[in-house]
Image 1 (spheres, one colour):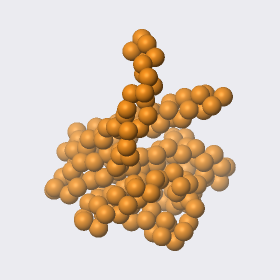
Image 2: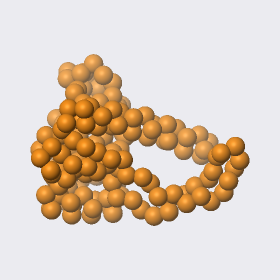
Image 3: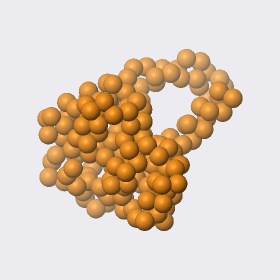
Image 4: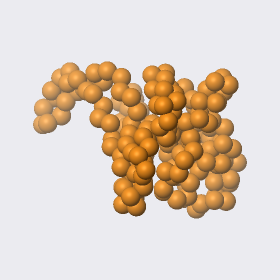
Length: 175
């Protein structure tokens, strides 16, 4: 059962990552942004055979994506997926909060990008008013997320998710 849950999380994460990768490819194609996926430093623990290995994270990494916006401004994005009405802020690790806070103070364009498939009827109905898609990108400016964290909110409310949900893929404007 534990392995099933881990495999499901990995599949959801990979799916969310492919949506974000697609949006970044469009941004690069439109000459709006140049982004890179930050590699996760892994340590091989055991070789399982047939090219498969068991790994663990070697150390904490910063954020998922970094790059440069048109005009030269640094760009940082941490990506998460969520299938609940509200996005739990506990899903963001403390070292990521510190890193994004520091980068934003230095002038970078920082984002929390949530690939969101809400589960509540209210959130689904509100989402249907802006798009027919059941899953949408929600690029939240880091300043908004930081404000919620500082205010000791446990989550990003679905109303805020709707406010920032983008039926289009490109979201690289200034927050």
